[in-house]
Image (cartoon, rainbow, N blue to C red):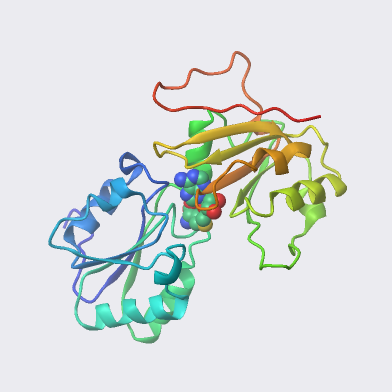
Length: 264
Ligand code: SAH
């Protein structure tokens, strides 16, 4: 058999990429087309959802869809139920399932019931943001380390991150879920030793029609994120690697790039 088939009673955790359906893998598209039921997150792009054939059942389990949002235990049991009923189940997740995708929770829940699980990778937001911003996440001699970190804070609680580790120079930080805590992130990184003028790229709605790239410096991070909507996914990339290349780059028409400079 040339391809992995999707067997009845199996769950595939499938990376949907950053939103643009052209950034979906061929394998993901094939799995979606062969599924009986697709469970998807709020971050999965509309263009990707449009690829789900009309006859395939689709269930939103988006954590950001307000009162319709389902908690993780509910999602786990929906997946278990669908697989035990003999369905070909696709669990579609934004970006790559292995990056802040809670894939292990779902795999563990399914394993308890002896349900086979497979994973199809996707393009994570950091890769897509680097492409849109025409930068590299690593840079010979200047960024030998890439850290993917989440700055999602519980309401009212300070972030519990290892700031001295994150503030190491010669590295790139890709901060997921960091919009709300951006000011706190900037202050802590500077307090831990990162230069105030470290370049930052804030990538919003990457690969979607509403894509916006905001450039600036670390001490203006709170200001840079101020105009981003609460529901718009945003990735903060920090480090020398994000500095625009000499001569800049020409952006494809139709995608607006917004440049912001530090207030200082
Ligand atoms: N598994 C996903 C990440 C899920 S966490 C992945 O691999 O990309 C959700 C966070 O991912 C968002 O808060 C945001 O920081 C980032 N993100 C996902 N899609 C994005 C997009 N299209 N543009 C910008 N950031 C995105």
